[in-house]
Image (cartoon, rainbow, N blue to C red; front, side, top):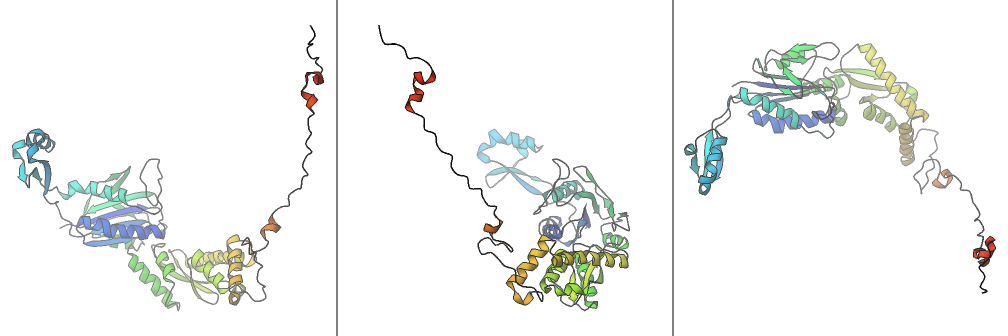
Length: 372
């Protein structure tokens, strides 16, 4: 039985979308093609390789109207399915017929289109008004049944027999067959297997002395690179005066780095010139730590103050705790101090109108005479 490849090429996907796609491809769509195969997920591609795909769908029994409505409904049901009314069979009190299975080549385009359209993400987007919704814009489709290319069109995105290699080093890559997918991409600088990428990152960190990396950061970095290279960087030692938790947050939460102790850190790069990549990452981290230390960044300064105020043991040497207002949760001034003073305006005196003001004579008009 043949092997099927379905690859969806996208703009860079966030790690959360990669995890959602991996779960759906494995649990929802792989069973549709026989249930035997593997799912490969990366930042620019979602791929499903199904092995031993049945070449024909099974014959199916289509249930029609009940037997007591034979005269009224049998003719219409038979006409709908292209058979004569006398060819209908009776099962369990209902008329019906056996529909023969269809070949895989006939059903595959519709199955692939359903797969692409029905994938759901926590956050999706439409890059063409009224068009397909996906986690990121879909740029290409590659569908191979053994060595044959299956033609599928989803909102103007036509499938072909090509994929894409590493964004910076390779362009289009010809996929000879579904079974040759992994070798073709690896030759183009891409590791499609997320488990292999995880192992490569763990091995690189282990060489730098980190045996137990943060699992949350590792689980995210796996889906951010297609050709992982673990590199080491450092930052100015003056930033070690900051609370350790502030420095760790800047590295792990902001930059997805792995602290190595002291002023050293490790990160997974997606290829490129080693010296240039290290220098660029060091410069970015220095900016983060500079913001945290100088207080020019609202996120960094507030976080460091909050940590220092709550945890005296993490407070930087020589720094006094920041005064906190109990009524407004402000770190500097209370709500009464921040609120501008109101001008006190004395009420305007009310002018009372005399009763004669409404009389005709007060307006200069003489009252009508009552004399005869």
